[in-house]
Each structure stands twice: as structure tokens, then as C-alpha cells.
Amino acid sequence: MARPREFDMDTAVDGAMQIFWRLGYTATNLPELLHAMGVSRGSFYKAFGDKHSAYLAALDHYDRTCIGSAVALLSDRSIGDGTSRILRLFEQTGCGEGVAPRGCFVCNAMVELGPHDSAVAEKTAAMSNRLQSAIYNALGDVPGINPFDTESRDRKAAIITRLYLGAQAMSKTGDQNADWKNLLGELLNRRIL
Amino acid sequence: MARPREFDMDTAVDGAMQIFWRLGYTATNLPELLHAMGVSRGSFYKAFGDKHSAYLAALDHYDRTCIGSAVALLSDRSIGDGTSRILRLFEQTGCGEGVAPRGCFVCNAMVELGPHDSAVAEKTAAMSNRLQSAIYNALGDVPGINPFDTESRDRKAAIITRLYLGAQAMSKTGDQNADWKNLLGELLNRRIL
DNA sequence: TTTGTTTTGTACCAATTGGTTCCAAACTAT
DNA sequence: ATAGTTTGGAACCAATTGGTACAAAACAAA
Image 1 (tube, each protein chain N blue to C red):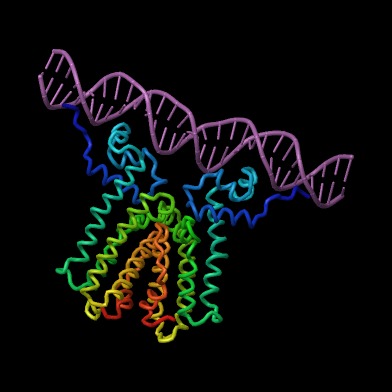
Image 2 (cartoon, chains in turn brown, purple, green, blue):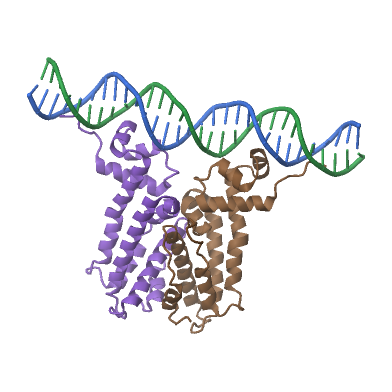
């Protein structure tokens, strides 16, 4: 009963996520954003309202896709025990040769807007909590760790989550940190093969 | 032989650091920056050149003051052994009640500008390295750690540095993390009194 | 006091910012 | 075919952006 939209909603949101992830919120201007989304100005304001709402939609998209697959990875017993799943999480973060590193969108968002944007603060806190509880679960499947010492697991999960975010921050200056196998081994007090 | 400047250079740089630290580079506009520095437009461009140079000066100022005192703290044996010095580092990061958390300027800078500003990337990488090596030294003074196992100390220092930056990032969403005593105890495998 | 030099503050600038308006276009249901 | 409804895109907007120009002001050396 009306003209159908020409752009694809999902690829538009994904494009928004890509550019916000790479450039941040403030540094992304509208023309670049529209180009990345494949949407014209009019359609954008009709469909999303404003730049800030588009950013929140991009954060939700990140939650569904990237955080979702990280959580899935951490709970996938076919990969190996908890240690190797956590190791995989840290190792799969690299981003190609010569490509400007974009870190983790959650880390970027909480650092840029956390203190001044309560919606972003809530969303990013929820996402890091989601990651942390997935790590907590994976730690229950690590040989040498007592799965019933929930307080110790909690502390370890908190440490690993912050370790992850800190490594993501440092990756944006070119830090590689290829030796996760030994670093996590040091942390979990066991050798990782 | 010429008119003396009316503003104080050091308080101006400090003011620039405060506002850039709190708001970030892009989100700080010139009027706010000038106000925070206590400098008029003309004087600013005469003395600093442009906004970006002022930001770099603010980063250097942070290195001298905040990173400097963190390094001093970590090497001050009058405080206690390495563990309590590292604990002190983590505990002294809180920022008052109701105050919008600003995190760590190094973390903020590397996340916001790292991938797109090589000067900032270099400076922030140097600062995090400085912090990491101070942590490495403090670890040499932790009971239960073999000071001659330099590789293990290196790994622990890398972990603690990233843990610190990650915690700083999360603090910007309101995360408090008051339990550093137990978290660091978990990490270093010893009870901290 | 005059001369030379630097700082200061204001007026000004072009470019860019996010956002709105509005109408032609494109579709469906009748 | 036509009426009804929504999209698309360009023209337009005021406000803000970082940065410049320039003259008055404030000093020191002569």
C-alpha cells in the first residue's frame, strides 16, 4: 500500500556498525555514515531518527553479532576445554595486515561516550557483563580449576574480561600481543599446548 | 623588550589536559578548551599552534605528572612490598562521588586516536610501556615470585598492565571494582592483607 | 619618549556540522 | 486508473567548527 524501501535494513545497520566501530561516534560525520549505510539522507532520518539512535542500533547489532559469536565460541565444547576456548577468543581478535586496528566496539564506545551518555553506558556495561559471564562459564570447564569455587571463578572472570578490554585498547596503537598462549597459561597456572 | 605573556604556561597545559582527559579530543571544542586553559584565542594559536599540538602537549604533561607519580608509587619501597604498591595503583584510581569518571588519559587517547594519529599512538604506547616496566620492577619485590624468572615476570607485567587499562575503560560506565585486594590476590596467588 | 617586539582579544572567515523541508517517485489496494 | 501512503533525494538551514587577520596594548632597550 506504499512505496517499498530500497535499502536493506540489516546491511544498513551493519554498515553503521562498521564505520562507528572504526571511527567512533563523534568523528563519524553524516555523509560518511550515510555512505557506509548505503542510505540517503531522507531515508536515514525517516528510518532511524537521528545519528545517536543509529549509533545505539549499531551497538545492538554488535551485541547480536560479535558478542553473540564470542559467547557462542566460549560455550562451544567441540572446540576443546575452557582454556582453549578463552585462548581462541583472544587470538581471533587480530585484524589483517596493514589494516588500521579498530579494537573492540564495546571498549571504544564505553571509553568515548560512557561518562556522558547513559544509554551507551548501560548497553556497553550489559555487553561486557555478558562477555564476563560467558568467560565465567568457560572457566568451569578448565582442568585444574575447581568449578565449585564460584568466588575464585568470579574473580578470574573479572580479571580476564578486563584483560581482554585492556588488550583491545592497546591494540589500537599497534600492540600485537601474539603470545596469548603463554600469557593465559601464566594467568591460569597451567601449560597450554 | 616585548610584552610579557599574561597566562601561566603550566596551568594552561594542565587545564588542557583536564578537559581533553574528561571530554576527549574531538568532543572538546575550541571555546571550551580556551576557557579550561585560561588563554584567549590569539594567545593560544601563538603559543601552541593548533588544537592538535595542544593535545600532544597535554599528553606529555600527563606523562610527566600522572604516569610519573604512578611510576614513583610503584617503586617506593617505603609503601610496602611490590604487591601492596601495585594494589595501591589500582585503588587510587577512583574519582570522587557523583563525578563523571574520566578513566585514564592514556587509555582514552589510544582508543580515540590510536589508529588514525601516529603521534598519539607513539606517545600512548610509550606511556603504557613505561607503566608496564614499572610494574615489572614492582613484581621483583613480591614475596612468592621468583625475581629471576624474568619471562614469568614479563608476562605478569603485561597482564597487569592490560588489566589496569581494561579496568580504566570499564570505569567509564560506572564500574567500580572495589575488590582489587582479592582480584590481585587471585592473580598473584597469594593473600593480601 | 621613542622604537622595536611580543602578547592579547576581537572581528572575521570559509567550511562543515547535524538536521529539516518538500516534492517527485514508487508502490498497493481498491 | 486512481487514490492513498510511504520512500528517496536534493535543496536548504542555522549553528558550530577550527583557524586567521589585525590592531591595540604592554612591556624593554635605547
